[in-house]
Length: 122
Image 1 (cartoon, rainbow, N blue to C red):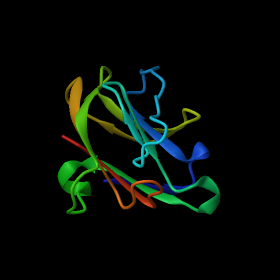
Image 2 (spheres, rainbow, N blue to C red):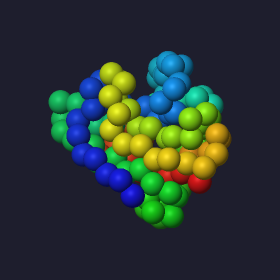
Image 3 (cartoon, rainbow, N blue to C red):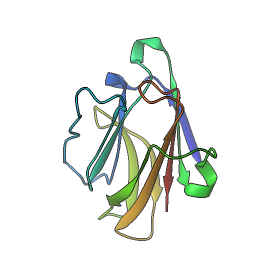
């Protein structure tokens, strides 16, 4: 498991293959700050000015906090890498995978401004 703690720019992170150039499409008015397509998953974090968010990336069993995930879906990984990036496209964490499509699970400790985001890959 990899971990980083920071106040991401624009209070969001993107989970994607580093080769993806698809923009995140946010659903305005949704209480859950999460947006997903087969190429990119956008996750809202604690407001940047309010402090840091801890982000964990690893295989499901490593990062599962024992609660129901807020998101489960498929992510295209043509270069076989799952990358967690800032909205400014700076890589925070990455995980090599053995196939070009993985199942992604996301857990957060708050629906709108989490201080903990766990990203599991299988």
